[in-house]
Image 1 (cartoon, rainbow, N blue to C red):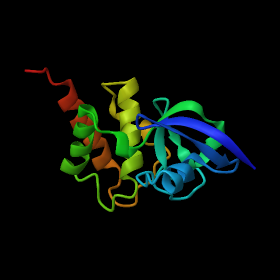
Image 2 (cartoon, rainbow, N blue to C red):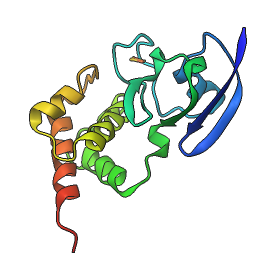
Image 3 (cartoon, rainbow, N blue to C red):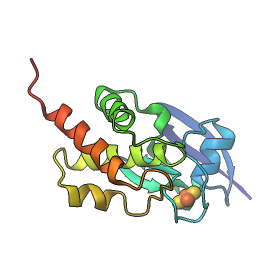
Length: 158
Ligand code: FES
C-alpha cells in the first residue's frame, strides 16, 4: 500500500507516493539520492543514519516516511551554513574522521546539540553521542572536535 508524503528536505519540498513500510532513511537514499546518511544496522543501534527532523537528531532508519507531513528534514548534504562548516573542519582538524562511516551521523548529532546548547560541557557532548558507534577514533577525538568547534563559534567576532 502506498501513501502520499510531503516533506521539506534540505530546504526543498518533496512530494510523492511511498510504500507504507518505507523508512525515512530509504526514502532519502533510494528515492532522493541523498546517501550521506548511512545504513549501518538498520535497527536503531548505530546512529549512522542520523538526520535532523524538525531540528532534532533522529535515527532515520526508525522513522516511517508516511509518518511525516510537512516536516523539515536536514541531512549532512544540507549542512552548508557557517556553523556547520566550522563543525566539519573541526572533525578533520582533530582527526575525528577516519573511515568516515559514522561521521555524517556524528556531525548531525553535533549540529543538533549546538542548536539546543551552544556551550555544552564534556558530559553533555558525550551524552549527545550515546547511540553513535565509531570503530576507529575511540570517541575522544570526536569530543575534541566538538570542543574545538564550540571554541571557534564562541570567539568574539572582529
Ligand atoms: Fe539507523 Fe543504525 S542504521 S541506527
